[in-house]
Image (cartoon, rainbow, N blue to C red; front, side, top):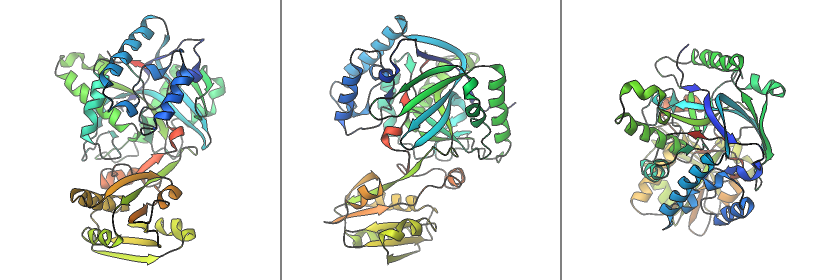
Amino acid sequence: MHDLGFSPADILLPRKGIDISKWATIACDQFTSDRGYWEKADRTVGDSPSTLRITLPEVYLEDPDKEERIEKVNATMGEYLSSGIFESHPDSYILVERRTAGGTRFGLVGRFDLEKYDFSPDSKSLIRATEGTILSRIPPRREIRKNAELELPHIVVLISDSRRSVIEPLRDKRDTLRVAYDADLMLGGGHLTGYFVDSKEDIEAVGKALEELYATLDPANPLLFAMGDGNHSLATAKSMWEDRKKEIPESQWADDPARYALAEVENIYDEGLGFEPIHRAFFGLSREEFDRTLSGYAESVACKPISREEMHGLINSGLGRFALSDGNGLYLYEARGTAKALAAWTIQSVIDDLLARKACQVDYIHGTDETLSLAGNGNLALILPDISKDTFFSSIITDKAFPRKTFSIGHAEEKRYYMEARRIR
């Protein structure tokens, strides 16, 4: 079989008796402007062992005591390891069942080989970024990871498995699997159940299904794994592995824990996996100036008034389409003859142009209602089309990656919670 870069891992989980509802906390890159959320999480956890104590919420990244927080995180990791908080489960996958208000979805936690991952825009690696990687976001994450003994992933990696052959067979037999954890998640996160996948039969079945999926890909451009969430965390791990390779002989690379990163694989065709576009708001920009700038990135631009009721159907019925509101009306735009087919790419070119000229301010907004409510008084709201699961992987192959903040997997409360851990040194 090919080495496809995904395999069982030596997984650490909290020992029996630890309150999972306090142990598991949401990904650090959520609620980055909402300190109140993290204060509630702190009160919920109290003195209980928790991943909140061994991760650093990004809301605190710009605080003057960031270094002290990182030191405290690392010290607490050591305390947890030495005091028996963790139990080790070698050579295992974890089947994850997550029930939220948006539905139930399934994933498989294992380790990814960073040698198979390349986040550069022209990458043809098996594991690939789906949005532009912002290099300036890597150094602060390196500071967090460089002395850490553990990694706790909020990374979600997608496979395009329309036959539902990799994860779903495990889903269907989960009643026969040993339960790893089962608990409600704090602050509206839903319910989380994990199952050990550690038998030779099941592990080989996962490998065989991935091999068959790989066989359907273009050998010259075999995109098997596409990033869903946490690309900058995986990029940080990759960056540090490249440094580590310079410190040790190549004969030691295969067994070095820094070569790998723990993450959860989810099938893009999972009915419970919601894809939502992230919209754009322009502050202090006239529609006339937007139109002038847009015209520089398209051979032609068509525009007509539309109603709110017909908006989603229209913007999703053709490439290069999006909706714009200036507070006085709602309009369908169609940009033709653009460098790339997706409207998000053309709009990103407009954003980069406007920001370079300091012509306005831009924000990225979740939710149609929330975005449209910002239109008017000199502000514009842009509504992007939905991201199609059927064309998601082919779009990455064709256009290399999506612009930053093009899509989101579910609402903030539905992001991955920290649960599993793995030693990285």
